[in-house]
Image (cartoon, rainbow, N blue to C red; front, side, top):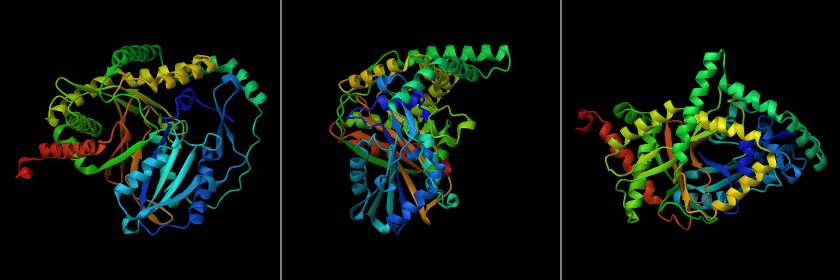
Length: 467
């Protein structure tokens, strides 16, 4: 039995009927598709490396403590592996429609919070594995590590026998929760000390100053809610599309125009939203796009863990000019300023400090906030842009090569469009997740992303290359 962190529990509390909180990825494989029993045998070999896959969530009665992970005695791989197909030969259109329908459906909270859908019928004999894992289990970084474990034939081994631990009773959950409260204050003090990483008083004072500066900048970034045509209530249904590009070309843009790969990605997203808003008849003059950018604050010692260590920063991307080279310069300057202001450090510490609050208060406040967002029309950000680097070497499952990974992240009202980005083996994919009813034009955004990349690629080219 393991108690969830406050951050993990928040994703459970935030879930509503219109906002299932799982992350997803569609891995496209070279054919031929394997038989179901082959996939199950592969998963059985991997499960010892993924203990959370055989556990479910138990809630403490009356929210007297945070939810806990316990072994699920009725675990059955057959329930979690689903098999379906698109009309053959299926292309991107068919995969987008089926994937969006599957990923819009909530996971069963009575079972371990994951599913793996095998999709057949793709063109050229290809097939896909579409994964769904609840955000309380993984974030983008740990989710990518999880897929690397699944899709690595080198890690295969003989299945190990597994016997589930005894499930605790409600009375035992309450007893442990009350006992945990007695030591939670000491744990939080220890966490604060770890954050400080203070070898001496000078270091502690420096870290404290960084936190206070970051907290002030974070408060400024989130202090004014945005009211935007991009915001509003969302339906339970989703649309999904993506844009493929070569990672080497994005790195060439970075080398030619400056900044980081993430700066280039954000500049392109800004230009694409400008295109989308103008296509909707909205003015972009003097306009910025308030964006939430999750960043990993995971330490090296946590690289193998499935829990989350993410914080968020909130740049305002300029969308008032068609010159994306100029936009890139402004994005680079802004992101450099955010890094220097230690906003991510402050956000991480504030999230950790939430553990000082009584668990029942956190649960009630989180659920109330989630219910209020269902009808909200304003937010401190208008979209979410996540950029998760993936493995840059070929991965395999059952001898079939993984050709690409297509990312998905959840939507939560009032934000109607999110843009997850992932890289794998030399490719970069911009995923676009939109509300089905209010965002029927996400392909306009996709076209804008591709056009922006091409514009920056041309701007970064040398005069000889332009000729």
